[in-house]
Length: 139
Image 1 (cartoon, rainbow, N blue to C red):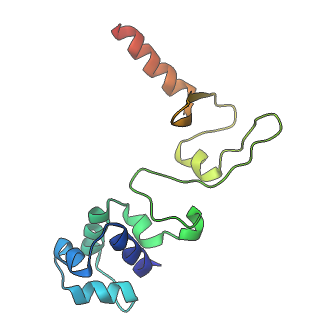
Image 2 (tube, rainbow, N blue to C red):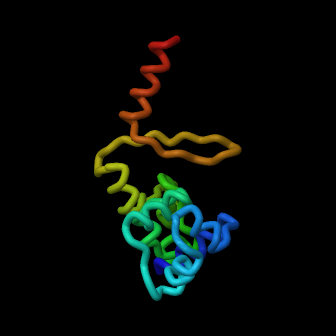
Image 3 (tube, helix red, strand yellow):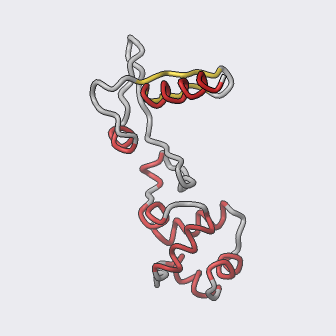
Protein backbone atom coordinates (compact mmCIF):
# COMPACT_ATOMS: atom_id res chain seq x y z
CA UNK A 1 0.00 0.00 0.00
CA UNK A 2 2.68 2.54 1.04
CA UNK A 3 5.00 1.72 -1.86
CA UNK A 4 2.07 1.65 -4.29
CA UNK A 5 0.98 5.10 -3.08
CA UNK A 6 4.47 6.50 -3.71
CA UNK A 7 4.50 5.04 -7.24
CA UNK A 8 1.00 6.33 -7.99
CA UNK A 9 1.71 9.83 -6.68
CA UNK A 10 5.09 10.04 -8.38
CA UNK A 11 3.54 9.15 -11.73
CA UNK A 12 0.60 11.49 -11.15
CA UNK A 13 3.09 14.34 -10.60
CA UNK A 14 5.15 13.31 -13.65
CA UNK A 15 8.20 12.66 -11.48
CA UNK A 16 10.93 10.12 -11.95
CA UNK A 17 12.43 8.21 -9.05
CA UNK A 18 15.43 10.50 -9.43
CA UNK A 19 13.20 13.61 -9.17
CA UNK A 20 11.64 12.35 -5.94
CA UNK A 21 15.02 11.31 -4.56
CA UNK A 22 16.32 14.86 -5.14
CA UNK A 23 13.34 16.38 -3.31
CA UNK A 24 13.73 14.03 -0.33
CA UNK A 25 17.53 14.05 -0.25
CA UNK A 26 18.11 10.35 -0.87
CA UNK A 27 19.32 8.17 -3.74
CA UNK A 28 17.17 6.88 -6.59
CA UNK A 29 17.85 3.39 -5.28
CA UNK A 30 16.24 4.31 -1.94
CA UNK A 31 13.08 5.42 -3.74
CA UNK A 32 13.08 2.17 -5.76
CA UNK A 33 13.34 0.14 -2.55
CA UNK A 34 10.46 2.09 -0.93
CA UNK A 35 8.29 1.55 -3.99
CA UNK A 36 9.02 -2.18 -4.04
CA UNK A 37 8.29 -2.50 -0.31
CA UNK A 38 11.77 -3.79 0.52
CA UNK A 39 12.40 -0.83 2.85
CA UNK A 40 10.49 2.14 4.23
CA UNK A 41 11.56 5.75 4.56
CA UNK A 42 12.09 7.17 8.03
CA UNK A 43 9.60 9.66 9.47
CA UNK A 44 11.48 12.74 8.25
CA UNK A 45 11.73 11.28 4.74
CA UNK A 46 8.06 10.25 4.79
CA UNK A 47 7.05 13.80 5.72
CA UNK A 48 9.19 15.16 2.87
CA UNK A 49 7.50 12.76 0.44
CA UNK A 50 4.03 13.78 1.65
CA UNK A 51 4.97 17.46 1.31
CA UNK A 52 6.37 16.91 -2.19
CA UNK A 53 3.05 15.40 -3.28
CA UNK A 54 0.88 17.80 -1.18
CA UNK A 55 -0.89 14.96 0.63
CA UNK A 56 -1.20 14.15 4.31
CA UNK A 57 1.25 11.76 5.90
CA UNK A 58 -1.68 9.55 6.95
CA UNK A 59 -2.94 9.30 3.38
CA UNK A 60 0.56 8.62 2.04
CA UNK A 61 0.97 5.71 4.45
CA UNK A 62 -2.54 4.30 4.87
CA UNK A 63 -4.55 5.30 1.79
CA UNK A 64 -6.39 2.45 0.06
CA UNK A 65 -7.70 3.24 -3.45
CA UNK A 66 -10.64 0.89 -2.84
CA UNK A 67 -11.78 3.26 -0.07
CA UNK A 68 -11.87 6.17 -2.54
CA UNK A 69 -13.72 4.61 -5.48
CA UNK A 70 -10.38 3.51 -6.94
CA UNK A 71 -9.11 7.07 -7.26
CA UNK A 72 -5.72 8.52 -6.31
CA UNK A 73 -4.61 9.77 -2.92
CA UNK A 74 -6.47 13.09 -2.45
CA UNK A 75 -4.66 16.40 -1.93
CA UNK A 76 -4.50 17.78 1.63
CA UNK A 77 -7.91 18.94 2.83
CA UNK A 78 -9.84 17.28 -0.01
CA UNK A 79 -12.11 14.32 0.64
CA UNK A 80 -14.25 11.86 -1.26
CA UNK A 81 -16.56 10.23 1.25
CA UNK A 82 -18.21 7.79 -1.13
CA UNK A 83 -21.50 7.54 -2.92
CA UNK A 84 -24.88 8.35 -1.43
CA UNK A 85 -28.32 7.53 -2.77
CA UNK A 86 -31.02 10.16 -2.99
CA UNK A 87 -34.26 8.93 -1.46
CA UNK A 88 -37.72 9.41 -2.95
CA UNK A 89 -38.18 12.68 -1.03
CA UNK A 90 -34.69 13.99 -1.85
CA UNK A 91 -33.05 12.91 1.40
CA UNK A 92 -29.43 11.74 1.56
CA UNK A 93 -27.42 10.17 4.36
CA UNK A 94 -24.14 11.97 4.99
CA UNK A 95 -21.41 9.34 5.42
CA UNK A 96 -20.21 8.79 9.01
CA UNK A 97 -16.63 9.80 8.19
CA UNK A 98 -17.88 13.18 6.86
CA UNK A 99 -20.15 13.70 9.88
CA UNK A 100 -17.24 13.03 12.23
CA UNK A 101 -14.75 15.23 10.36
CA UNK A 102 -17.18 18.17 10.14
CA UNK A 103 -18.76 17.56 13.57
CA UNK A 104 -22.27 17.13 12.18
CA UNK A 105 -24.69 15.71 14.74
CA UNK A 106 -28.34 14.74 14.79
CA UNK A 107 -30.47 17.87 14.96
CA UNK A 108 -27.85 20.17 13.38
CA UNK A 109 -29.21 22.51 10.75
CA UNK A 110 -27.48 22.59 7.38
CA UNK A 111 -27.71 25.07 4.51
CA UNK A 112 -27.80 23.67 0.97
CA UNK A 113 -26.23 26.01 -1.57
CA UNK A 114 -26.24 25.53 -5.31
CA UNK A 115 -24.39 26.80 -8.34
CA UNK A 116 -25.67 25.57 -11.69
CA UNK A 117 -22.11 25.29 -13.00
CA UNK A 118 -20.29 23.94 -9.94
CA UNK A 119 -22.90 21.90 -8.10
CA UNK A 120 -24.26 21.67 -4.57
CA UNK A 121 -22.56 22.53 -1.28
CA UNK A 122 -23.78 21.69 2.21
CA UNK A 123 -22.67 23.97 5.04
CA UNK A 124 -23.48 23.99 8.75
CA UNK A 125 -26.10 26.70 9.28
CA UNK A 126 -24.24 28.34 12.17
CA UNK A 127 -21.11 28.82 10.04
CA UNK A 128 -23.08 30.10 7.07
CA UNK A 129 -25.11 32.54 9.18
CA UNK A 130 -21.92 33.80 10.88
CA UNK A 131 -20.38 34.56 7.48
CA UNK A 132 -23.64 36.16 6.27
CA UNK A 133 -23.68 38.41 9.36
CA UNK A 134 -20.06 39.44 8.72
CA UNK A 135 -20.93 40.32 5.11
CA UNK A 136 -24.02 42.26 6.17
CA UNK A 137 -21.99 44.15 8.77
CA UNK A 138 -19.42 45.17 6.18
CA UNK A 139 -22.00 46.57 3.75
